[in-house]
Every structure is written in structure tokens, then in C-alpha cells.
Length: 357
Image (cartoon, rainbow, N blue to C red; front, side, top):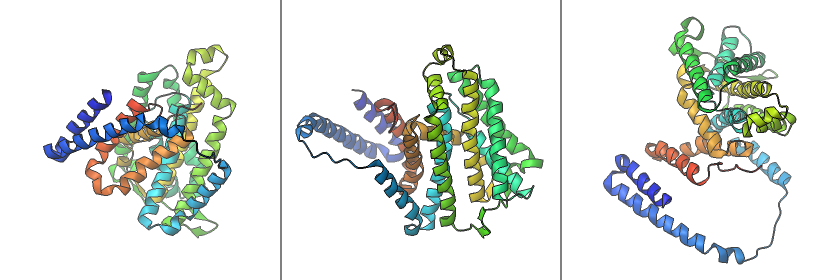
């Protein structure tokens, strides 16, 4: 019954875009698809009864093949699609950082784009005004972003759930307004231009295919480090904090310390993503770091599965790559995104790849 009501609601939402005739067609097709799904579900027992030979593929071989495919990707794509995958890599790093905060430790952060902005602006100012190169400005921008995450931890220590979300949302808006109005430092709405691209051993990286490998390297580093931390004592403490903070504290876990760690560690990866974004675009402005950017990153974590590294990567790729592939239907992209999230919350609240302990 819930599914039928949802299909009716979806058809109602499509009225402004498709008209009455289009909405009725969508209603008919969706109902037909749902009935077909029910018929397939009923006949699934007969399908399961057929025994197929069990083939086990080595995970290491699959990962190796995937790595080779990703390394060869720029050779078979146009610059436009390489640019999309570079952007996807930056958002994967962002989503992995937010996953530490939301998925591992259970702290709801709705202002994560603030750390993204701090990393980008710290790098831009160090590179343009201080004259530091990419590799000289990178560690300093990460340090500044990590310290900003530490500063946010102080008011967040005694807050939970909605109250913590409001504080982080306010923090994000404060950063955005500061960047927009501090003309002497950030150049206000005009932004900062002339940000340098990275170089390796004297070789200037100017082509998108070259920058793709820089971003890909940092994605691999982020996945390797975050997975290692997740499987460590710190990761177990974060999971205990997420499940039941009071019980975790009663078992001797210093919840204050691990909240500090979660917010600071998550901010570090947002700073890295901001640095890569600023270097790629060679120009940044406050309009790239709005509240909707924070919501978009949260959607990636929720869609893929909070707490799952593979799920977060999947969610990021879906929300960045699919809209570009389906650009002809851009009028319906936000409708499709909202519909997808509603479906996820109803039928699979743990995300596409989540729920496994």
C-alpha cells in the first residue's frame, strides 16, 4: 500500500514538468512496473530452486582489474568526461571525510562545506599571496583545516542530534558570510584567481589527464588511511560512540577525545578536497561553498550507506557521474534525486552498500 501511495505522490510531483497527460503516463508505467515486480517476486522461489555452479572470484584480482581500468580511463575519454571524473574524485574525498563524522562516530554535520571552503581558501591565499607552490601550501592548508575542525569540536562536545546539526549548520553559514564580506583577505564575491596547478619534479601539470592521476593518487591515499583508522582501536571507539554514547563512556571510552578526533580527522579530508578543487579550477569564490553543497555531500553518504567506505564511493560516483550522463534530462535531475532519496529511506534506509557489520 505504501508503494502505491508513493507512486501516486511521484506522479503528482511530475505535474508541473510533464503536464496532466505525462503524469498519467508516468502513473500507468510506474503501476505496471510495480505489478511486474510483484509477479517476479512471487516467482523468485522457483528461480532460487535452480542450483547454479558456485564460482568464487578472488577479491584481490577484482581490485587489480579495477585499478588497471581506472588508470587507463583517461586514454579512452574526452577531456569533458575526464573533468567529470576528476570532480567525482574530489567529492569522493569529501564524502569519505564526512563519513568519518556521520557514518563512523554518528555526529550529524550539516556544515561540512565550511571545511571544504577553509581548505580551498587557505591553499589559495598561501599559493597566491604567500607565493608558496602546491606542495608547499598543501600541508599548511590541511593543518589550518584540521585546527578549524578542532575549534568546532568545543561547542559540539555536549550536543547531540538536531542540536549538533544546528550548530554545524550555523558554523557553515558563518564561514560563507565571512568569505563573502572579508574583502581585504578573500576578495569577497569576486573570489581569488591565479591559483597555481601542481608540478612534479619540475614538470608542470596542465592537462586534465595529468591532473586526473594526482586526484586518483589522493583518493587511494584517503581510502587506505581511513580504512586503516576504521579497523583500528580509534575506529572501534567511534562505532561505540555512534551506537550508544553513554554505554561507551561507562566502558571507559573517552568520548570527548574521540569527538575531537572525529571532527578534526574529517575536516582534514575536506581541506584536502578543497585544495584539489582550488588548484583544478585556478579560481574560487564563496558561491562554490554554500549550504546546498553540504546537503549534497550528506546525500552522497546517505545514498551509498553511512559507515561504508565502498558505499560512500558508490554514492559519490552516482551523484556526480549520472547527472552528467543524463544531461539531456537536466530538467528532471533534482526530481530524480529527491525521488531516489525518498525511495532509499523507505526501502533501504541503510543505503545502497550499508548495514553490514
